[in-house]
Length: 91
Image 1 (cartoon, one colour):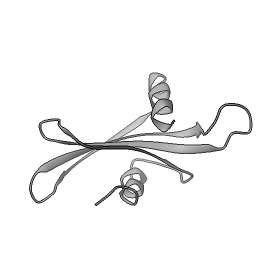
Image 2 (cartoon, rainbow, N blue to C red):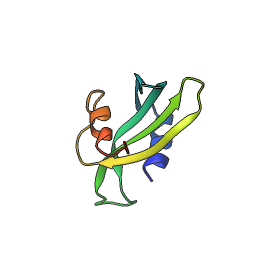
Image 3 (cartoon, rainbow, N blue to C red):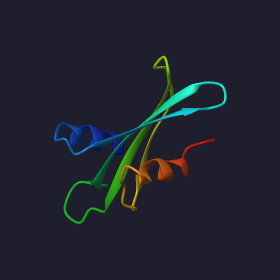
């Protein structure tokens, strides 16, 4: 559901993007965070509204290493997205 809403909201320019490049000790990886606020969990009035984020991690050649979508009740911004996702992402 989060990924579907991000795709829909992206058409209207409501999706923000943050890119972080990092060294793993063996290779460089690129984390691409796409996030938006006010995503309803279901259709209709009275739906709970969450904030959603999608993380795609690739190596330098563009090979996808990790992909996942997350939902949270906490507000998101360019600084909070990587910090918040880190709590969910596997190590």
